[in-house]
Length: 299
Picture 1 (cartoon, rainbow, N blue to C red):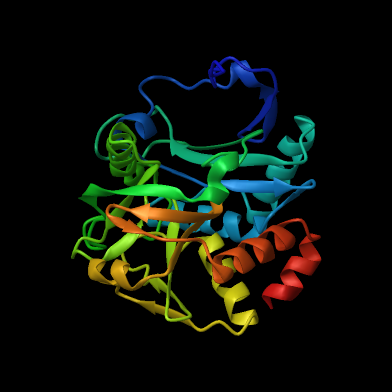
Picture 2: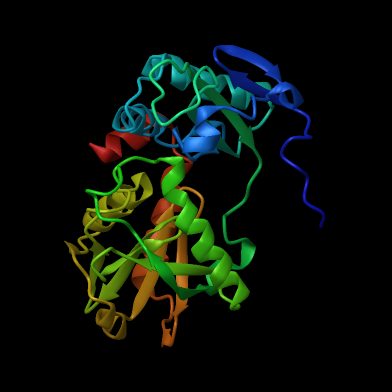
């Protein structure tokens, strides 16, 4: 199936407080965000007309901007409303929602004090990141690039620039026949895939890397809460690569990936088992609940 270019689609995009036609959502080529990666974004999913954990995503978007040194000129309530409005305007109930904030074209240099901060929200239909066959389990190669030291980049932000090495790593993995890549931390521990957090089942416990140089995902935290509700012990720690040999199950968790089993990482093979299946089912049940029920269960 031919891909539909993102700049030539029907629909509506929310841009700096106004709904505009999809094809009119354009910015100048000398925008600071394009040249210097001064942009932050969110990836959100709507299920049955409700954006899952919208408030948490909006809070992270605002904080990501602050970590990059700018304040988004809209309140959390206005951003939440924009996300819901664009979903309704495009007549979608199950969709991927993408808010993006960036520095504009008023000034083009490393210093960008005079730039205006823009915000847009778009949405489109996008099934699971790994497709309908994800339940068979995906295969990961080992990335050459590593997640940076937190003193070299604002690693707690969902900043556009931090995804450059993810793109490079995913392209290399796909060229080698894999679905994605496992990225290590700057000091050689297991980190994450190019766009999702990772969990390992070792001796009946759920292990996940400490997010000290990569994003502490909202889906990650959701899965941890679901595991604890089931009485599954969750262990956050620095996980050596050698511990892949100890894992019986591995899965990824993220907004785009949702909960996706992993069947291989390099030469290590895994079989999706009871813990992966249970947490996948729990997650799928949670995301279609009403927002107030989701909030109650997260309390």
